[in-house]
Amino acid sequence: MTHFNFTKMQGIGNDFIVVDDRDEKLHLTPHEVIALCDRKFGIGADGIMLIRKPTNEQADFAWWFVNNDGTIPEMCGNGSRCFARYVYENGLLEVGKKVFVLETLCGLKTIEIITDDSGIFEAARVDMGPALSIPSAIPTTLDTDANGYVLNQKLITTSGHEVTVNCVNVGNPHAVLFTDENPGTQEDELFYVLGPELESDPHFPAKANIEFIRVDSPEHITMRVWERGVGETAACGTGACASAFAAYLTGRTGDHIEVALTGGNLTIEITENHEVFMTGAAQTVFTGTFDATI
Image 1 (cartoon, one colour):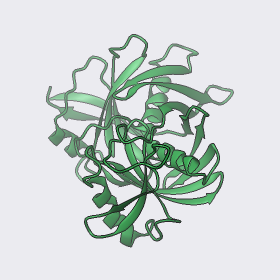
Image 2 (cartoon, helix red, strand yellow):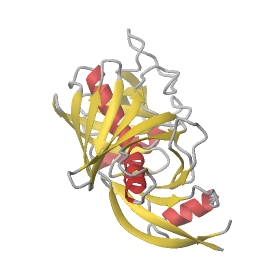
Image 3 (cartoon, one colour):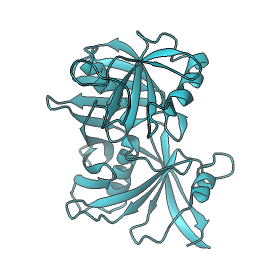
């Protein structure tokens, strides 16, 4: 057994175990991931991220990211902000450098570190890339609207509920339900039925993250999320981006949106070219060591 140092971090309640593994000595099995993320018998987390050296010469870092059930997502928005705080505060970046590129399974992500005047980390702004709402990008077998977007599509769940979904990919797949079309879906009675059902619905061959959205104003939405491979979480960064984009495309909001999640708020900006930027906080919770076989 070998000792590994870790840092427990959270981005508005979405929490992670972070390990500097640039020497690539740590190789976790799904069973080990589940054990480490267990909230009663392990460290407890929504996922694990290992900091790795990039294979793309344009990137500064790469990561190996895994959900707490052992599945590998394409991207994690909240995790990327925790990653930014870790590399900044642990001296992995050159002195004075506040913008870096992270290599992920869905491409290169440029991340800007925001500090106060004394250099203390305050937030990170992540270029999430283009948001897409076409069937092949989600992926989904649902139909499209007249513009070719997977918006306002009817779906009947396995329990017989008819819902209207809006599908967006921001590095990973999302299905967004607005409460004005799907009343009561943010409440426990429907949330805990529809979340897991829609995650594994046959219309989503790669499964999907499910967001339930109340539009409060053209500048503000409130979100509850059921994450693919995790279940309900306090926050989902890519989900906030997907929900804001769906709200923008359907005319419910403008292009600068505050998203209120259970764990805190994120600011989402959408450009004319449908590029999405996410800004939010990240905190260190505690540090420690764990044993693993290598």
